[in-house]
Length: 431
Length: 188
Image (spheres, rainbow over the protein chains, first blue to last red):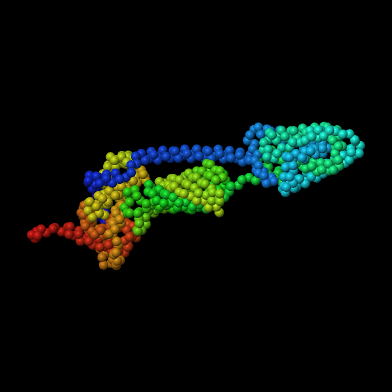
């Protein structure tokens, strides 16, 4: 007889069905929560989640593209401590700037020819706007190189003009009314109006017109000069120097800004003069993160804690390696021991896709591949079941508020491929 | 087989009639595996029902077209072990002892047990003390090693060896009594 025979007998033994046992079973089954069409529900939720993910990724990509255009058009010029933005998104502004640029080139070309006419614009120095620009220009340490180069050019012009003036004073006795000088008063644009291209271009037009008029009416200027005293001539020459500097500065700045806006920041940096510094926003920051919340593992409730490091790469992306632990008490009616529980230890790498990001607020879709170790324990007894380390992935929606001290608080809700999830309050501490 | 898969799918959707069909099928085929851990049929049914709760709630993880009965048997046996563990009275306060004195000849024991019918085997197993029955069933019928028994039940491995020998000795004694005609008090 086979030595295993009694085991085979037991294995093949059939017990008649007991209806009483089934009635007990029915009572137990009635304690389970209703879960009709759970598979259908899960599929529906999965479809909704996938649709949401697809829409989110499309939105992020679209926004990212718009952001690139925006960044390329946003030029922050830190000149004399003043930060300004020039937008080329508006077609009208772009056209105006192009027209202004053509005129600017013309002005620059004409300037050496108009040195005599520029010399007579002494009254323009008394103009309020011109005075303001003059003082700003003199204060600027960054413009020293640029201004000094302009000074050298103007000094030559001034010397030439003075020589010519001296000759004319010796030969000419004619008088001309002061109105001619007043007429030639140059209205320069205010600095705050620079980003209003159309206004500025019209001002440049008027400036160039004045310069042309001045250049064309050399006789009137000569007459005017003859009425000035030597002291006035000296003062006007100094003022003229400043005015010329400012005029050149404005025209060259306009040209540079226009070229930068059209060419984009990367290529343009190399072409900028030394006295201009281009700064692009760099929101790269590192944070410690801590999370505390409620977990749900296989329909059981518990707690969730996590810690990680968040790298705020740019306006679109962030990266966050995180170690978390979750525990949920077995309360779904199938436990055989009080306080038995499910545990999860997880190492995840969260990728943040920012759906909305401004200085203080961040709403992001977050996806994480992870490694998770699951096990169950029974209170006061040895390990009951260890299910090993498995690959997992999670998706979360998160909101973060960055405080003035650069630390932040937030809320994250997440679900995983397995039947678990959590809602956690988060704290960000800057490195 | 396909019918069984259909029933399982309906059970996942919590259809009560399908649950009853699956329960009935499993009860007839596998309840013996639980019976050897129970002291009587009432406790067998209770442990079996606890195990079937696990079966019903874990059906989604069951791989279709694989051995359902083997899978269910594993869950049911584990439910029986957990049931033992959940009883607070089972504090292992036994001292590990040497087991040589309790050794029973394996060959004699196998032959003796194989001579019995399944129902008789179940009956004499249910008459064993609880720990002896548990260790014997786990080791001899379900193939757990003494180390695994220690991990799962907290019973020291040396103690479980001693309990196993003791269970075999008791079973041998009970088998002999079972074979011997009962005296009716009249010398017959």
